[in-house]
Image 1 (cartoon, rainbow, N blue to C red):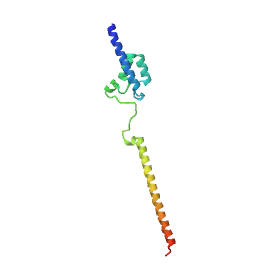
Image 2 (image 1 turned 45 degrees about the vertical axis):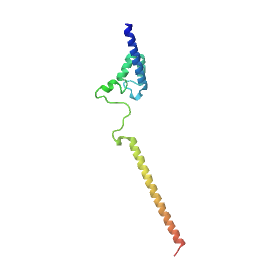
Image 3 (image 1 turned 90 degrees about the vertical axis):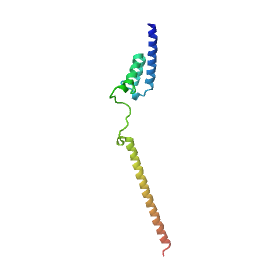
Length: 131
């Protein structure tokens, strides 16, 4: 009996340590079924079973999550599928449009000022030389 108990204890401790390290390093947004803190408590309090449960069900990369057909990710950030669904992209387009509009307005004002300067220079030339 002790011959069988020692390897079982070693395997149990190994699974617990591996699952605990993986649970701690996994972001909270990627855990499944229970919050990350509860998973860590379960792994510590129920060593072999808690570790095996974490490895099977705990995170999005777990064994069952990757092998079950039809599994879809339900948590974590999702990326928009089209550009018009992406708010950041739409904001950047607005910023570009506004910047272009400002540039065009500045160019228009600059041309207007140059034209006025030329008109003033022409008027001053005529006043100085009244032929």
